Image (cartoon, rainbow, N blue to C red; front, top):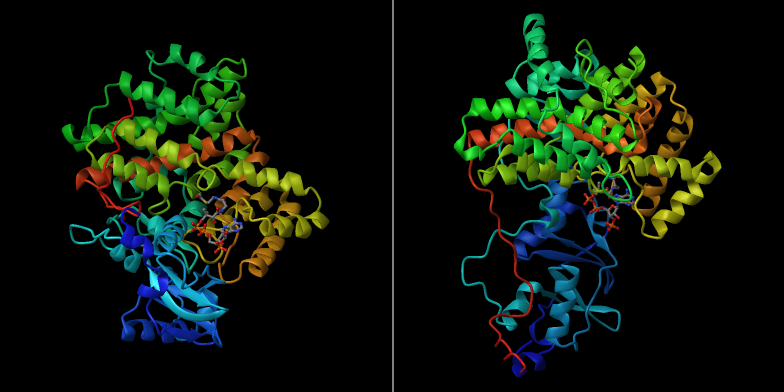
Length: 516
Ligand code: ACO
């Protein structure tokens, strides 16, 4: 903090007291009523004079997004338990730093174990003279949880129901009844094709699977770069070269039809690029796409050079369809942000591949399979999972930002793995049941279940895909969703440009002269 006066102020000078409190057996509706009446952004949950939790506006947004009944849900299920606290004698600067570092907005003030007040980031900002010069931006929860940032007609996810849809159809029912090409048509064009339209669609896709001649010679160089092969890094480099070679211009400057054609080509060619890169890295010649095979069978064919069994093609098609689109997930949002700048489709897809590659998003299925391998036997599941969560590690393939009940994709893929008689299905099922119990025990109220990645890995392994190709397989279906969103964004565009709350040292401070 810059000025001497600020340094002398202590938390007791600016905290609010008395504090608005609720007891842990009161309901979320009681807490909301009290927050509204007293016009405060948080309530402290107390046991006598001792603070045992805090419930903030951020928790309320999370709660509202869950669709739970506020009249019956207890604050104890939604509060942050054992919140960090601050001593009233602590200097304002120090308290400000603690809040900023931990990204808290409110912190209870506690003296000798008793609650004596509460301070907010806003109070500390005022005293530190960090006053925004313009109207403050709307306060949104971290990670944009539950925030609506656009309109879409492509699909949506209903987290508390465990339901998701593509256009107007239940995505699980579509998956059971239709082919990947049909669903691609639905997502791109807006309706399911009849037999004639499906044939035309397939005829349109077939030549687009071919890798353009100017890109082919680059692939072996890209595939053999680096000590370890990271297929998504190789994909983004080779796809970027393809977009440059085909002259994909800024979406702002081209027609919808041109952008649509580029999106078609992108979705058709990405599986071919991926399999060519994989084979080249492994010293094998790429396998050309098979003109008579549908998307899923051709996918496995280009990997192994053999026509897969019907069951394998069926199983991988179920996985691919299940992952085409899923609301405003991080990679789809990335693609839309990039498109909103008017940039080319190639940039949007490369950015989305990067976002998907992270372990908190699409990078989890091989890690989930590693977990199954690591646990090895049913009797290891409980102690190993418990230890992981107690140490603060995440169980890969569990938890979801939107689903607060079973992920319908996980249920679907568990059935597929069972149908395939996948080698690990019994152990996987046992681990799933144990993990749900352990998470409920150690992370009560968070509602953590298996997500798409858990059984996704089991299905892909059973179809002969190497673990390194799990996330790339996810990419090759999700690109259909990304590019549908690119088309939708470009058709009705406004630059996506949010704001951030500045929480660093108060500006402007004098810039120290350069030492000579
Ligand atoms: N294992 C253990 N604890 C977990 C897990 C998990 N898999 N997931 C969430 N939690 C806990 C968190 O530690 C946190 O606990 P806390 O309140 O004590 O701090 C609480 O649940 C809420 O977690 P957040 O990180 O706030 O939830 P968020 O919505 O941001 O995260 C995510 C969702 C990233 C998917 C998370 O559940 C996770 O890391 N899972 C493991 C990775 C994974 O499976 N990723 C694939 C997701 S599916 C997809 O993208 C296609």
